[in-house]
Length: 263
Image (cartoon, rainbow, N blue to C red):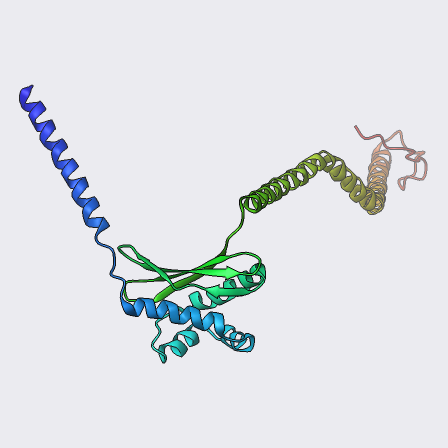
């Protein structure tokens, strides 16, 4: 029993040490914020915020790989899609801010796998923050612009989003309930279509039945005539051979078959 307890304690200690060592190894050290990272983030934001509208339109019309090649010749390493998204987001934010008064110097921070540069933007109607994220090779991977909203504005937006989401859900549920309520009419519609098909097919069916009946009657009449002839010939032959039948013509003219009853 004691040996079992000792083994359990040893295994538990080994597991705890393994988890702690894994966590320390995973965390690592924060990246060093170099002068090139500061210059890259400041330079790209200065270019985005100072270029005129026509130049921005030309850049937005380019493909991501063309953007990367364009900035590479100026010494910038940037993701093309991140730049296009960053320019569009900044232009939308400027409309909400009512114009830009001033942009601060970047506030740099880093983690074990990225570097961020945060710029405070002083706007006419509201302020904003521009955040540039770089990887360990100082390549710009994202550019985001977030406007500062008051608590009341955030609450109003949250309420509108909630109402919109709930309203959409209720509309879909009502639509589904209407569709389900229409299922009860499906059997009636099927019966109606079946009746129409039978009504449309009845004249043709009657014509076919009449034709078949006429054919059967003709065949039965022909069979009766043949049967009458056979019976007549048999009776005539019998009467002609019989000694008491001298008064009956062998041709059968002395009698007539009136009807034939089938059993």
